[in-house]
Image 1 (cartoon, rainbow, N blue to C red):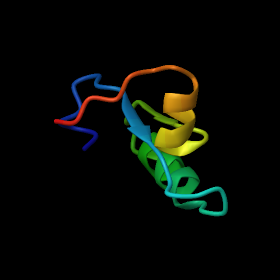
Image 2: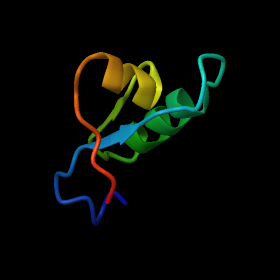
Image 3: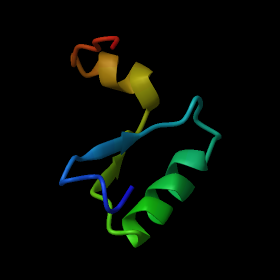
Image 4: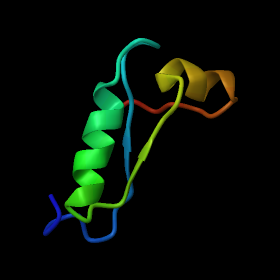
Length: 56
Protein backbone atom coordinates (compact mmCIF):
# COMPACT_ATOMS: atom_id res chain seq x y z
CA UNK A 1 0.00 0.00 0.00
CA UNK A 2 2.80 2.41 0.80
CA UNK A 3 4.15 2.14 -2.74
CA UNK A 4 0.79 2.44 -4.47
CA UNK A 5 -0.98 5.01 -2.30
CA UNK A 6 0.19 8.02 -4.40
CA UNK A 7 -0.78 10.40 -1.59
CA UNK A 8 -4.34 9.10 -1.25
CA UNK A 9 -5.65 9.65 2.28
CA UNK A 10 -7.11 6.44 3.66
CA UNK A 11 -9.85 6.58 6.30
CA UNK A 12 -10.27 3.62 8.64
CA UNK A 13 -13.29 2.91 10.85
CA UNK A 14 -14.62 0.18 13.14
CA UNK A 15 -18.03 -1.35 13.48
CA UNK A 16 -18.62 -0.35 17.09
CA UNK A 17 -17.49 1.73 20.06
CA UNK A 18 -15.65 -1.15 21.73
CA UNK A 19 -13.63 -2.12 18.67
CA UNK A 20 -9.99 -1.07 18.49
CA UNK A 21 -9.22 -2.59 15.08
CA UNK A 22 -9.32 0.83 13.40
CA UNK A 23 -6.73 2.17 15.82
CA UNK A 24 -4.46 -0.82 15.20
CA UNK A 25 -4.87 -0.59 11.42
CA UNK A 26 -4.27 3.17 11.45
CA UNK A 27 -1.07 2.76 13.44
CA UNK A 28 0.19 -0.01 11.15
CA UNK A 29 -0.55 1.96 7.98
CA UNK A 30 1.05 5.10 9.41
CA UNK A 31 4.18 3.09 10.24
CA UNK A 32 4.29 2.07 6.56
CA UNK A 33 4.16 5.74 5.56
CA UNK A 34 0.59 5.57 4.24
CA UNK A 35 -1.47 8.77 4.78
CA UNK A 36 -4.25 7.57 7.09
CA UNK A 37 -6.79 8.84 9.61
CA UNK A 38 -9.21 7.04 11.89
CA UNK A 39 -12.90 7.94 11.61
CA UNK A 40 -14.07 8.26 15.21
CA UNK A 41 -17.65 7.08 15.58
CA UNK A 42 -17.53 5.08 12.36
CA UNK A 43 -19.91 5.71 9.50
CA UNK A 44 -22.70 6.50 11.96
CA UNK A 45 -20.61 9.32 13.42
CA UNK A 46 -19.81 10.53 9.91
CA UNK A 47 -23.54 10.73 9.04
CA UNK A 48 -24.35 12.32 12.41
CA UNK A 49 -21.96 15.13 11.47
CA UNK A 50 -23.97 15.73 8.31
CA UNK A 51 -21.42 14.35 5.86
CA UNK A 52 -22.91 12.40 2.99
CA UNK A 53 -21.97 8.80 2.27
CA UNK A 54 -21.80 7.57 -1.31
CA UNK A 55 -21.66 3.86 -2.04
CA UNK A 56 -19.24 2.90 -4.75
